[in-house]
Length: 172
Image: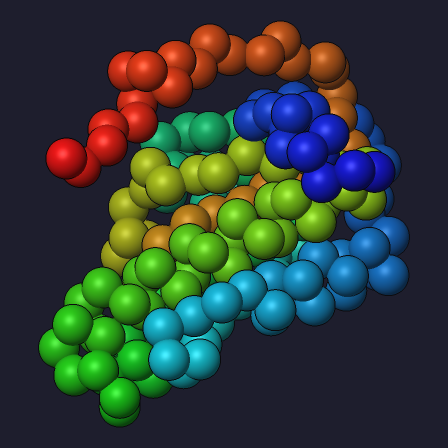
Protein backbone atom coordinates (compact mmCIF):
# COMPACT_ATOMS: atom_id res chain seq x y z
CA UNK A 1 0.00 0.00 0.00
CA UNK A 2 1.24 3.51 -0.83
CA UNK A 3 2.15 5.64 2.22
CA UNK A 4 -0.31 8.40 1.34
CA UNK A 5 -3.07 5.85 0.80
CA UNK A 6 -2.34 4.39 4.26
CA UNK A 7 -2.62 7.84 5.83
CA UNK A 8 -5.80 8.58 3.86
CA UNK A 9 -7.48 5.28 4.80
CA UNK A 10 -6.48 5.12 8.47
CA UNK A 11 -9.47 5.51 10.76
CA UNK A 12 -10.04 5.18 14.49
CA UNK A 13 -11.51 1.69 14.78
CA UNK A 14 -13.86 1.05 17.70
CA UNK A 15 -15.30 -2.25 16.47
CA UNK A 16 -13.13 -5.32 15.85
CA UNK A 17 -13.75 -8.63 14.11
CA UNK A 18 -13.30 -11.85 16.07
CA UNK A 19 -10.03 -12.72 14.34
CA UNK A 20 -6.56 -12.93 15.86
CA UNK A 21 -3.63 -10.78 14.78
CA UNK A 22 -0.95 -12.93 13.19
CA UNK A 23 2.35 -13.07 15.14
CA UNK A 24 4.39 -11.98 12.12
CA UNK A 25 2.20 -8.90 11.64
CA UNK A 26 2.55 -7.93 15.29
CA UNK A 27 6.31 -8.36 15.00
CA UNK A 28 6.39 -6.07 11.93
CA UNK A 29 4.37 -3.45 13.83
CA UNK A 30 6.79 -3.59 16.77
CA UNK A 31 9.82 -3.45 14.47
CA UNK A 32 8.35 -0.38 12.78
CA UNK A 33 7.69 1.32 16.13
CA UNK A 34 11.31 0.62 17.04
CA UNK A 35 12.43 2.57 13.95
CA UNK A 36 10.60 5.72 15.03
CA UNK A 37 12.77 8.77 15.64
CA UNK A 38 13.38 9.74 19.25
CA UNK A 39 15.07 12.59 21.07
CA UNK A 40 18.82 11.98 20.84
CA UNK A 41 18.03 8.39 19.85
CA UNK A 42 17.51 7.69 23.56
CA UNK A 43 14.29 5.75 22.83
CA UNK A 44 12.75 6.90 26.08
CA UNK A 45 9.78 4.55 25.94
CA UNK A 46 8.76 0.93 26.49
CA UNK A 47 6.03 -1.08 24.75
CA UNK A 48 3.88 -3.61 26.61
CA UNK A 49 1.82 -6.22 24.74
CA UNK A 50 -1.55 -7.04 26.29
CA UNK A 51 -3.01 -10.29 24.94
CA UNK A 52 -4.92 -11.85 27.85
CA UNK A 53 -8.64 -11.12 27.77
CA UNK A 54 -8.78 -10.52 31.52
CA UNK A 55 -6.07 -7.87 31.24
CA UNK A 56 -7.79 -6.21 28.28
CA UNK A 57 -11.07 -6.23 30.24
CA UNK A 58 -9.28 -4.56 33.14
CA UNK A 59 -8.02 -1.92 30.71
CA UNK A 60 -11.64 -1.30 29.64
CA UNK A 61 -12.50 -0.35 33.23
CA UNK A 62 -9.37 1.79 33.59
CA UNK A 63 -10.16 3.54 30.29
CA UNK A 64 -13.65 4.88 30.99
CA UNK A 65 -15.37 1.69 29.79
CA UNK A 66 -14.06 1.81 26.24
CA UNK A 67 -15.20 -1.74 25.39
CA UNK A 68 -13.21 -2.04 22.17
CA UNK A 69 -10.05 -2.46 24.28
CA UNK A 70 -11.29 -5.94 25.18
CA UNK A 71 -12.78 -6.60 21.75
CA UNK A 72 -9.49 -6.16 19.90
CA UNK A 73 -7.37 -9.32 20.15
CA UNK A 74 -4.27 -7.42 21.24
CA UNK A 75 -3.43 -4.03 22.68
CA UNK A 76 -0.12 -2.27 22.92
CA UNK A 77 0.67 0.10 25.75
CA UNK A 78 3.26 2.75 24.97
CA UNK A 79 4.91 3.96 28.15
CA UNK A 80 7.29 6.85 28.70
CA UNK A 81 10.58 5.90 30.33
CA UNK A 82 11.68 9.30 31.63
CA UNK A 83 14.98 8.06 33.05
CA UNK A 84 16.22 7.01 29.59
CA UNK A 85 15.69 10.49 28.16
CA UNK A 86 16.91 12.25 31.30
CA UNK A 87 20.37 10.71 30.89
CA UNK A 88 21.09 13.05 28.02
CA UNK A 89 18.50 15.82 28.41
CA UNK A 90 17.79 16.13 32.14
CA UNK A 91 14.39 17.40 33.23
CA UNK A 92 13.20 18.31 29.71
CA UNK A 93 14.06 14.81 28.52
CA UNK A 94 12.21 13.27 31.45
CA UNK A 95 9.09 15.41 31.26
CA UNK A 96 8.77 15.96 27.51
CA UNK A 97 11.06 13.95 25.23
CA UNK A 98 10.13 10.57 26.71
CA UNK A 99 6.44 11.36 26.12
CA UNK A 100 7.17 12.51 22.58
CA UNK A 101 9.19 9.34 21.96
CA UNK A 102 6.28 7.13 23.09
CA UNK A 103 3.79 9.02 20.93
CA UNK A 104 5.97 8.95 17.81
CA UNK A 105 6.55 5.21 18.22
CA UNK A 106 2.80 4.71 18.60
CA UNK A 107 2.08 6.72 15.45
CA UNK A 108 4.53 4.54 13.52
CA UNK A 109 2.82 1.43 14.94
CA UNK A 110 -0.58 2.75 13.86
CA UNK A 111 0.54 3.32 10.30
CA UNK A 112 2.33 -0.04 10.16
CA UNK A 113 -0.83 -1.78 11.37
CA UNK A 114 -2.87 -0.10 8.62
CA UNK A 115 -0.26 -1.06 6.00
CA UNK A 116 -0.71 -4.68 7.14
CA UNK A 117 -4.51 -4.56 6.81
CA UNK A 118 -5.18 -4.01 10.51
CA UNK A 119 -6.92 -1.19 12.31
CA UNK A 120 -6.30 0.66 15.55
CA UNK A 121 -7.55 3.48 17.72
CA UNK A 122 -5.43 5.80 19.85
CA UNK A 123 -6.61 5.67 23.47
CA UNK A 124 -5.35 8.38 25.77
CA UNK A 125 -8.30 8.64 28.16
CA UNK A 126 -7.55 6.36 31.08
CA UNK A 127 -6.69 6.24 34.77
CA UNK A 128 -2.90 6.24 34.67
CA UNK A 129 -2.48 4.61 38.09
CA UNK A 130 -4.94 1.81 37.26
CA UNK A 131 -3.26 1.12 33.89
CA UNK A 132 0.15 1.06 35.59
CA UNK A 133 -1.15 -1.58 38.01
CA UNK A 134 -2.75 -3.68 35.25
CA UNK A 135 0.48 -3.64 33.24
CA UNK A 136 2.54 -4.20 36.40
CA UNK A 137 4.82 -1.35 35.36
CA UNK A 138 8.08 -0.85 37.19
CA UNK A 139 8.51 2.36 39.18
CA UNK A 140 9.21 5.32 36.93
CA UNK A 141 7.38 4.19 33.79
CA UNK A 142 4.30 6.15 32.74
CA UNK A 143 1.57 4.80 30.43
CA UNK A 144 0.91 7.32 27.65
CA UNK A 145 -1.16 5.55 24.95
CA UNK A 146 -3.13 2.33 24.66
CA UNK A 147 -3.41 1.01 21.11
CA UNK A 148 -5.88 -1.81 20.46
CA UNK A 149 -5.06 -3.63 17.22
CA UNK A 150 -7.20 -5.95 15.15
CA UNK A 151 -9.19 -6.49 12.00
CA UNK A 152 -11.99 -4.01 11.34
CA UNK A 153 -15.42 -5.01 12.55
CA UNK A 154 -17.09 -2.23 10.53
CA UNK A 155 -16.16 0.40 8.00
CA UNK A 156 -15.95 3.79 9.72
CA UNK A 157 -16.62 6.95 7.77
CA UNK A 158 -13.95 9.62 7.34
CA UNK A 159 -14.10 12.36 9.95
CA UNK A 160 -13.91 16.02 8.96
CA UNK A 161 -10.50 17.69 9.16
CA UNK A 162 -9.60 21.34 9.49
CA UNK A 163 -8.74 23.10 6.26
CA UNK A 164 -5.08 23.94 5.82
CA UNK A 165 -5.89 27.65 5.68
CA UNK A 166 -7.24 27.38 9.25
CA UNK A 167 -4.48 25.08 10.49
CA UNK A 168 -1.24 26.31 8.93
CA UNK A 169 0.28 29.66 9.89
CA UNK A 170 3.32 31.20 8.25
CA UNK A 171 5.74 33.17 10.39
CA UNK A 172 6.35 36.55 8.75
